[in-house]
Image (cartoon, rainbow, N blue to C red; front, side, top):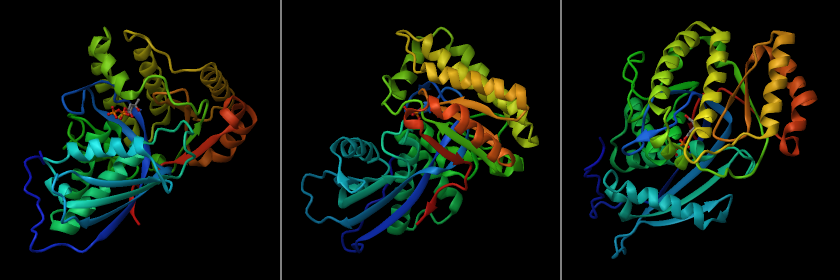
Length: 362
Ligand code: DP6
């Protein structure tokens, strides 16, 4: 929808070198995106909470590059102040794929400096925060150069669209508190091409809400999300799964509007288990859960039975457990984590996070 663009810098009106900086958070999906088609389009709609403490800071410097005879994108990339060729080459592939949208990228010299608020290889996926930060930087650069994204809604929509092309889940990080990505008749203006904000429909319970991430393993996962999505192609449960996700989303939206924590928690946990069941029923099958993941889940269930506290879990495509609970029980839950759950985490590491206000330009 933004392709075939004519955004080209007029060489008689060359811009001054400039920079933009964004801080963008990660997000945690309650209804999971697992399975895609076409160019990064989801097989089912998903809904996520936007996090606050797990984020990426990214600075993009750009200047007009007069001598670029080969017409290649000129990119320097530093991660935590150090060159990182693997990340640079990924980013370069992505920027090249954006040329139909941003043909002017070839006219610039770009320098990106990026860093995460959470320890490197903490087992926390950084693609949502880093790719949303990059998309936001690109939109700010576009607006500075051409004045084409003055309208805040148009800005967010384009940032979400660009983020999706880099990593599907990243398109949901653009919005405060919560976002929906993927067409559903229950959310007006929802789209497969970009996410939209869901904050204005959210009960206040979910605006003061925690997600403590229990890091069972810091290791890189054996099967990437990209490969996992692709394996949905031959999965015999794929079609019923997409229907199930749509139905669960309808129920979840109702619960998140009214503040019904029990229904929210049931769906969050069912979605986590379904995601991993889909991995186990792929061909070839794979398992990302670890014994400690299951031990945490068992202890949590027991804790809930004993205390009646509304603490629920969800899982990403990995062994780490996200504990979801409202702000009014934070002290009790943190004590429970310390006393009973931290022992199941690598180096006892827990990333404390909560629902936040979304990205900010800094
Ligand atoms: C399990 O967004 O990482 O976290 O689009 O291939 O980059 P790509 O996949 P990615 O998949 C996320 C999968 C998930 C569920 C979710 O966040 O919805």
